[in-house]
Length: 275
Length: 354
Ligand SMILES: Nc1ncnc2c1ncn2[C@@H]1O[C@H](COP(=O)(O)OP(=O)(O)OP(=O)(O)O)[C@@H](O)[C@H]1O
Ligand SMILES: [Mg+2]
Image (cartoon, rainbow over all chains, first blue to last red; front, side, top):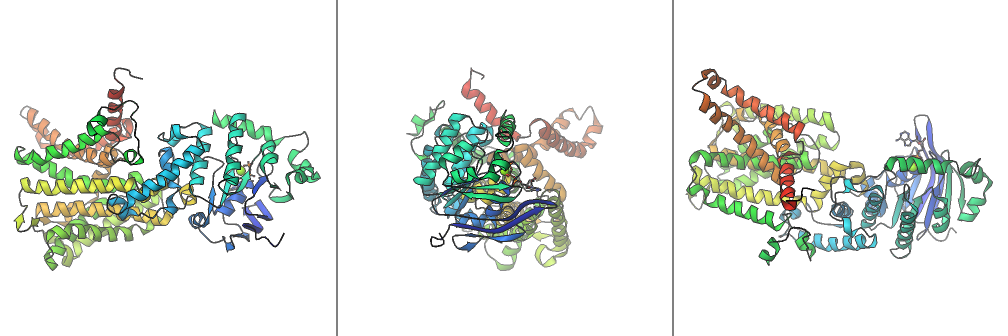
């Protein structure tokens, strides 16, 4: 195990907000090429964990090493450049931009033109570069089947489509590791199946390591290589999907008293948000 | 090929990404823009000096307004000190020309660069603060610069002001309205093309991303501090160019002209024209320049019967501007550019109004 260097090594991360301990001494590692899922009840600290990795939150202690480099202390934009992309649980698109421009923003760190060459557009080679990247973006648009909305203003789209555009924007970064925060929340069965297919393709064909938070246990069991369970900010189990599900503490904490208490709550809550 | 495209409206179909990334949203818009420029090229031959003067004003204020729109409309950062940058550009160009003898032709872009440098420095707080605090910081920079204009004799001539030589090219002086109109027209076309290009390339998108959702912009690899400050710098560049054109037009630059009132008027221009619209900056400027003239003409028409009105003209003009800004904020918050889009959309679908 120790021989293959992990892509992401999280060690002893603790994070608190005032008196709330969002995360307590959480450690785990993600191997290159994996689909790694983080599950746990509402408020367990899953999103907080992703925020620590992508740099939105500064943990109180611990270390996060990505590709042998310490991330703590780096700004979110520098972590992006290192190869970390993400989507958000509460959508975070650029609402007044077109879908196309949203995705083009994902190319930001790969583009070289700046305000000078960009303003001169035809003269400094910016046009050529923009068009090359535009072609890349069109590939992503085709892959995620959003060609019909490429000129739509992002803020006017339905919830399911916005989730897909967010994924497209994160994919456009060409990250080595993509963090997905509840990519299927609020979706119907068909949309979920599409999303699961996209994630598998990203992992297998595009070579992206996936770290995913998801409440739908069916999907988690189907597509994850390994699973970690958080509860009240603590890691209570991790391993292969079946192992984790068999873990008594997990059954108690997550699947709980009467089968699935937290999941229907989340679903209805989110579909309420959509309507 | 151009004519084949010009007919297309419903379901326009573009075959290459290049056609799909043009500055103008439709071939028609492109033709209207080119047509307008051609019209303006012959305008000095028949327009009387009064209208030429208005056109020149719309030009140099419009360039500065585009700058304000870049920082306010596209990046979402308030600036209450835009008039001071406009003034700095005017002084900088005159000063460069007077002290070094560099031709005015080169002094104008150099003044733009100097104003940009100043904007980058004054914009440093923008890397850290937002909203009301930034409003106050830029408000303060307005007063600091006004004070600087009044005291820095070496740069501005202090209370006497500074002479600004006319724009000349190969010994030909553009020293009357007819001639200067072309100088301003050239700069308007160039600056608006640069602006439109900026906003369809990497750094322009980064500005809009920062405005729409700064947290996710940062996660997308955009350095917030850099872009917040850069936006102020670029905005100041446009203000500086506009100011320099203003100075060499009047031939004389004095410190009193660049007050908070002018900063507010710039705000009015971009609000009325449309925040986040390149061409809206020009529409809004035209509106703000022409409105007082219309008021004056109106008062002139009925003034014989109401002499009190003629005396109150100055107040009426200022109030009209304030009222226009308020009415736009309430009824047309997206500005003239948006209204124009709606009208176009209506005609496109006519006679079907859905
Ligand atoms: N910015 C914040 N300020 C204060 N408290 C926070 C903040 N972010 C998270 N918390 C708290 O930290 C805890 C963990 O929240 P987090 O969002 O990480 O949970 P989660 O596992 O993602 O839950 P969910 O399934 O509902 O998305 C919660 O108690 C939450 O209230
Ligand atoms: Mg969450």
